[in-house]
Image 1 (cartoon, chains in turn yellow, blue):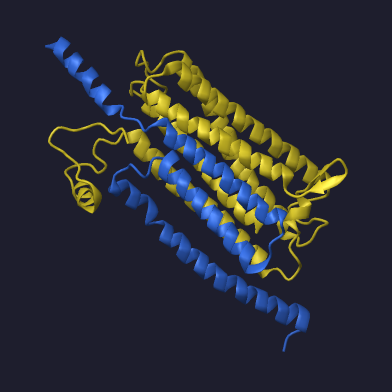
Image 2 (spheres, rainbow over the protein chains, first blue to last red):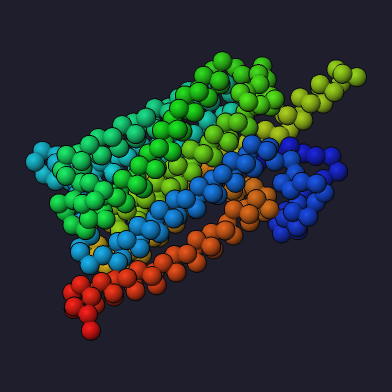
Length: 236
Length: 119
């Protein structure tokens, strides 16, 4: 999107550009920030990890002869004595999408060198992520109180618990790591590390707002995974 | 010399920062909310069977596509990157296909030996 231009290397659009880029001298993805390319490669590998979890869930759920718990009832909350199906999950989904939107805007304002706006938006994203994790903790403790264990539960097929804790746990872990980094980058943006070109940790790389885009890629990926978990685990 | 280099550097940086208009992000954001609301409604109205599954998949892929295309900027990225990311997904599709056959076989065996009681 905002890749550096390299003299003598003009990328043609479409498949012609792809052919000249992949077949070009020395390196592929010419002009793409290395951190961004590596984040994409990491996200691709992470996609495979989550795919394996979801596929094993499909296999487990499809091969049990006991009825699968009705997620609509298991994850319902009582509001004024009336059970509302999937209420908490719906709120969690909206919170995560909200934080994804603020992150997208933070990336935009970052590239426009609007430091304050970028910082506040990252902070908002971090707070959204923290809210999400908090609600997940509530959800977990509620289910554990109701007797859901990795080896069995009172609602139906005993595989339910292990898949639930594994998939949502791994996703929640990703969100938690993301929240930590969002707070760190909130500090870095407000402290003006990208204006003063301060170097990051473990790297000679000078600070640049492209880091915010890389962070954004990770955060959107977390939201992306939740879209699939929401569809397959909670709604299916 | 150094001074001119610096100036060139800054003009270069200015050229790079061609960001998208804010409107497109807000529209995608709104669309994601609306689609999430619709997929929640699938459960709310307790649609069942093929209608439920196709609606869930439809909203899911639409949401995933919007996030990847606009929030993760893949729509504006070069083809080399897009292709490197999307072609491996066929391996996942292949794996899903294989495991579908596998769970059907496991289910059959469990019914046959645990419920029917074997041959």
